[in-house]
Image (cartoon, rainbow, N blue to C red):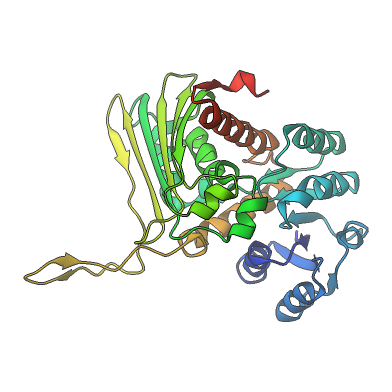
Length: 336
């Protein structure tokens, strides 16, 4: 069985997903691509031999041969497209966040539930082989009960200020992946959030109403404590590490590098810098998450990343921001 896909959004991540389906996922094929920028849709369609390119995503939804859609458009359009796609009976893979407003998120999730279609949220880091191995160790009981989790997540450089102004802030744009990863690894729900944050990288980020440096403490229902440290700029490259301490042992990950060479001299022992950013670091995880979505559709299985998994990190992000603004711990029950 081959699943026919429509890709909505032909920007960076839309291109990645379309290329992965074309070259690496034989169970699916892209039959249509939509983007408000006609040149983007036309260019991707021409390069991958996609039959339909359009500026109106509703044209994709109207096609009965399309089984599922990938929502890769701008954040402010996600919820509307999800609702429309559900009404059209299409299975849905959506990039995060579903929306910045929890009430809007709930409306989208209600539409999906009413339609009875598959809904999969694109938290690709769950499918990274390294982090998946950490989850396996925890879930199997190999390191016992989780006591402490430390997630380091630092970007090589901040995004453009124009993007910062519309992103929803660092906690939604960047830390949302770490909130999801913390839930995924610990296997429990966050009950309380405490944030310390500052502007240490670029004053223009502060002028835009955001922060660029933060440490966030999460307290889980099972008693585990997690710390997340974020920075918009790590000059040495993309820094993505996890350290877990359990009652029976621990497990730690390191960064990935473009090669395994170590260069030794009388002065120093050196190696090349880590992979520079997320497109290089998480190449394989993008393939694996789309494969998991296709598997859910083909074999009628529940998606492994659900709508609720998409909602909870947004609530945690709101709690993190409120904690920063009010300088106090915030219970998730306060957010709703």
